[in-house]
Length: 420
Image 1 (tube, rainbow, N blue to C red):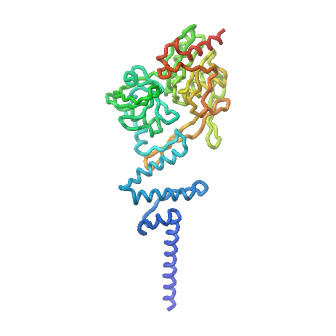
Image 2 (cartoon, rainbow, N blue to C red):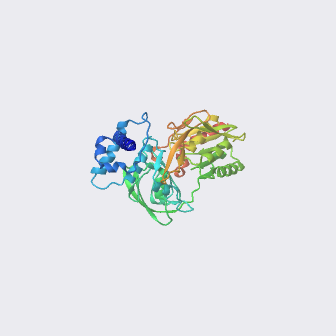
Image 3 (cartoon, one colour):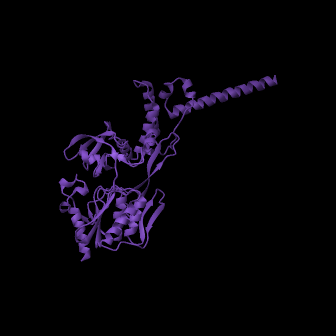
């Protein structure tokens, strides 16, 4: 009899515990979702394995969590056709990054990440343009290279690339992803649709991809033995190239130097530091600072350039170009001529450790000039502001005749003044 009572007691405890467990589980589900969402599914569905996202209550309003769940539930139950929640969820992850309103921070789906990382060939095969994202996140042509399909086809500086092979790319806010679509195998064709602000028209170009052998640096001697070096982009070996061009000009007896950074979208951080090191005296070149105010500083040695210098910048001079221009300006090593630069003072990193194969490009720090100024969204202001004539704004820098290049002429004049 005693054993029977014990058995019934055990059974009662187990039943009560089970009921309490299921009641607690159901209550938590209803709390996380809503009663309406809960009753929309058969009870057995809620006992399948579930996933959840966790947010601190101070970070997210529970009503917004409920709104997210309600949207999911409505789409799952009432949308007119079956829903691919994998695709939808990848889009919502993109939204998580996009909510920062930082054009340099974005989530890449597994497919996009694969495309981003793969190298289609050992050479650069494309149409021959350099690009940047404008204020409206439209891919904009910054420069059209000589002897390229783009130049032969008629694409111009400032054209906005809106379609690639008839695919609308205006909602893709990462320049690298669009560029990957433009590149391809040599001999294949790509259809590019651009919006041309000058004529307010849309134009289609069918271009054949070709190996593009671009020299990102060129030099010559201008009037009165003034040297001129144009850097189109800071690629992986531009510092060595700069040293060679500079030494060659010095050997020819130049008395001063103009460095042209107009339309230069930036490039390798460490390469521009080496070039700045060649120009400015011993001291700080640039430093980065992250969220915790941790600093990483880059310094130059005692060697410096001992001749009058002007640097040309414009609204398309960005990132690494701005590091060089700001450093020279802070040390008073040269005169900046042109228009205010683009204003990109952020450092990016990429997280590839996603189990699903995706990735996250994100901003990890800001960089600062030697004087402690962050030029992000401010740009580097020239010492002497000079604008080009309006009709030359869509002309590649190297195609502007010297006699019409007001910015270059002022830069040369400033060097000559310093020689007197």
